Structure formats: C-alpha cells, structure tokens
Image (cartoon, rainbow, N blue to C red; front, side, top):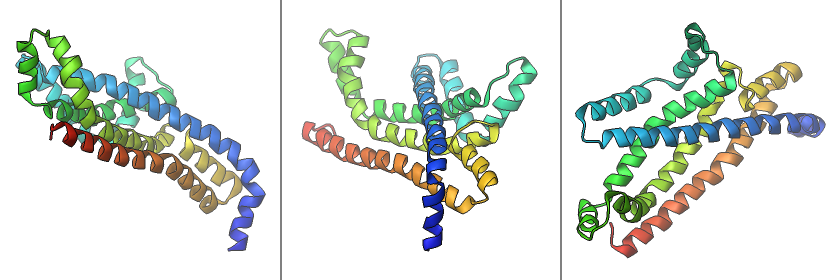
Amino acid sequence: MNDFFQVYREHLPEWWPRLMDAARVTAEISSLGFVLALVLAAGLVAMARSRFGALQMAAKSVVEFLRAVPLLALLLALYFGLPAFGLTLSGYWAGVLGLGLQGAAYVAEVFRSGLDSVHRGQREAGLAAGMSPFQVFTAVVLPQALRVMLPPLVNCYVSLLKDSSLCALIATDELMLAARAMSSEYFLPLHIFVLVGLIYFAIAFPLSMFSRLLGRKLSRGRRALGTT
C-alpha cells in the first residue's frame, strides 16, 4: 500500500498540471455543449408546441432520433463524416456539437415536462386579465416551470460532463485522452486512471448533491405555494 501512494508522491507534481489542463478542456466542452443543448432544446420545444402538425412531428422525430443514437456513433459521424461534405471540425468542436445535439434531446424533455407542470388554468387566467401571451409566459408560466426544470437540468449537465470522456476517441485533449497518453508514457495506468476518476468525482458529485438539495428546496416551495 505504501508503494502505491509512493508513486503519487513521486509523480503527482508532473501529472497534476497536465491533468488540470485536460480538466479545463473537459469543463469547456461540457459547458459549451450544454449551452448548445439549451438553445436547440428551446427550439425543439417551440416547434413541438406550435399549432402546425408538421413542426410538431419534426420536433418529435428529431428528439427520438437523437435519443436513440449512441453518443459515440454521433461523435464519430461528426468527426469523420462531415469532411466528406466539405466541413471539417476539430475534435474539440465536434465534441461540443455532438454533446449539444444529444443533450438537446434530453433537455427538450425537461423543458416540456416543466412547462406542462404549470396548470393550463393559470395561462387562461393571465390572458383573461389582459396580459399578452408573451407576458403570461414570462411572468406566470416560466417562473413556475423553472422550479421543476432546474434540478433535472443540473443532472443533464452532469451527464454531459461524464459523457465528454467519449470525446477522447475523436482526439479531443480532455481528461481521458490525457490519461491514456500519460499511461503510455509512465506505464502506470492504474494510478493515473484512479486519479482521473477522483477528478471526475470531485466535479460531478458536488453538482449531483446540489441538484438533489435544489430539488428538495424547490419542492418545498411549490408545496408552500400550493402548486403541487
């Protein structure tokens, strides 16, 4: 056991800066992918709630397709397939796009369930009071829907953060690719991957706990308001 930890005492000063640079890239592609997912999901929900059947069907088809396609297949298609159409993306941006596309399918479901949780009567009451549809959405529907949406949105971000490890397979300089390179360099894969796992845990676990606590707090708030 002492020999196991002796390796960290010997090599950690060399490993830590490289892993922190890779962790920064992991956080960047996860965050950018999540922002893209939010934007795309908002568009998909707007289409799904439109009055036009064709848009509703298109939105549903896109969501089902993106949820059915494995993320790895999507990343490989973007990285290796797009050059055939004259568009070449780096591993970094192919990772952001892939995470954003698949994340959008799940975020869209979060948006949909959040909006559906607000009783229709509240919308009708706002319109009857002379508010415009936009005012009803921003002042009545959205504040209540956010209480439902925020905890699962945090969970969606945590899922994207963990799924970003697949971006190593398209040459993105994130944590897993750095770990693989360092394992080949130092021939200490167990020590390196244990350390990388702890870094992922240190990032993801606090966010998961925050999501759980946020869900409890907002649930109590909804009960106090009589909305559940």
